Image (cartoon, rainbow, N blue to C red; front, side):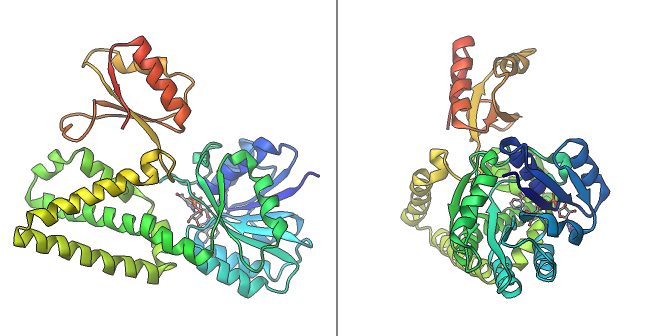
Length: 367
Ligand code: NAD
């Protein structure tokens, strides 16, 4: 039976979800809420949604499934508002917030006793882009789509959500909301703090040491890439997961102190072990097996500095899921080759390696 889905917030995540839902369920009716007109207009014009509103409450009673794709604070405010609306019996409410405990707690507080089902969710894909204009039907491909079931999640809720979202081609997984927030504090929230701190430290340092800007290369770029993330989103993530993040900061300070002490003592063995252990741990980690969250599939090509060489390679790769291309110039200390090309999936990485080695004599390296 064709369902009516209400996407609340036609930003990057909401609009990309609308596209993914349409892909497998072209007969479903998608309603969209957005505060500003620009994203509403784009979503309607591009056929992502069938109808649009700037009045959140007006479409809610029509929906079989409501997906809140808004900043965390606003998600909570709308959950509270939904509790007072006359919704369809058994409607499913879900969200996309990057932290889960505060949202799930709010749902349990406000929706308990109503004839609604709720399941918290976090699609682990995104970028620094915002708004419906950046929507991408493949945004969630191969990414984890985390559900955090709670007392408001009945057994059939997840099945219905997975069916609705099948066109996202994501990997569905379930985890407790608190555990989700602990794990993401370590592997996502804290690394963002580190990247931004390192960026800030370097920027201040570079005021006195101008060459720091010029010498910053591959390692520095890899470490600070996520410092370009959207500040509003990260502020609300940190504020909605305070305790666990503060724990990670304290833990890290101790680790830094330990390395500092080893350096001041000149303890060669301890320093070597420090690096060696981290190397072994990283090699054993899932990101290294290309299965991890947010992983892209990179290959490096050693190319001569000749006219049209990049165009020639791109021509060979026509039709692959190429997502990024980067030319590593000047300092290539810790980088293989010069041209770095990223793909969305492993099949295309292999295909690209094959195409380039078959058709050129350039060296291709996959790290
Ligand atoms: P976005 O900026 O592209 O979209 C945010 C949406 O929220 C827009 O539709 C905006 O109009 C709306 N909005 C903002 N403040 C509002 C308010 N006060 N009242 C009503 N509407 C308001 O952001 P996004 O990337 O789509 O993020 C949406 C949610 O998804 C956030 O909770 C974010 O934590 C989560 N998320 C983001 C990413 C990512 O990398 N972008 C990844 C996973 C989850």
